[in-house]
Image (cartoon, rainbow, N blue to C red; front, side, top):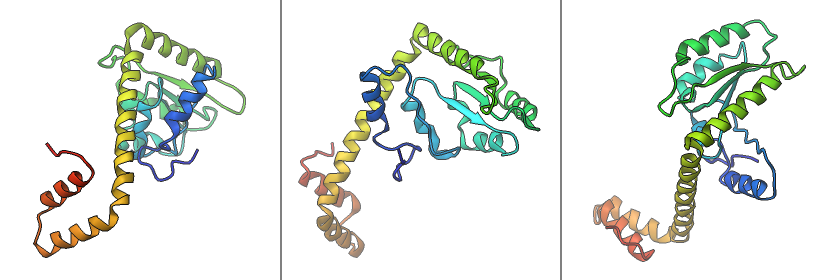
Amino acid sequence: MSSRGQLGGLSSATQAAAKILDAVGFDIVIVETVGVGQSEVDVVNAVDTVILVLAPGAGDGIQAAKAGILEIADLYVVNKADREGAEGVVRELRSMLGLGVSDSAGWSPEIVTTTATNGLGIPELVTAISNHRTWAIASGSRDLRVAHRAKTGLRRAVLTALSDQIELHSARIDELSAQVASGNLSTDEAVTSILRELGISKH
């Protein structure tokens, strides 16, 4: 499912699709983002467990650190572990994360090494995911994440609806922006006017 230009690395329909899959009985739903970058952090609002996958030789660790993605991951996977440099990626991760220290909620993220081509480390990854799920349910962390997911989903839906309404008033916005540009109207006054026409009180 393409991100369709949406910030956060996910399509706006991703959460809805995941809900449908959950409702029809799928025990596991995997959501993959478009890649490592600053746009990826919204995935934390869409899933129960965030897994960051890195590979040797790609500079992913440093890139992820710069993008602030390391902080949102619950598990870290170093794939292509049979390649040169994999151990270095693990050491780099441990150094950046200071592993062994639990986060504020009490979870200590794990680093799992895998080789997808031969299945090396896959059983350990499945166990790590299961361990995180068990902890999240027992600690109440999953309930908090689900509640936050519902809130952010609702906010996004409201903003999308408002954006659609604004598009319907594009001619009026052009008219008001011309008045703002000429100095006949302040930006605040223009906003108030648009909101009033949409039936929304600014205060």
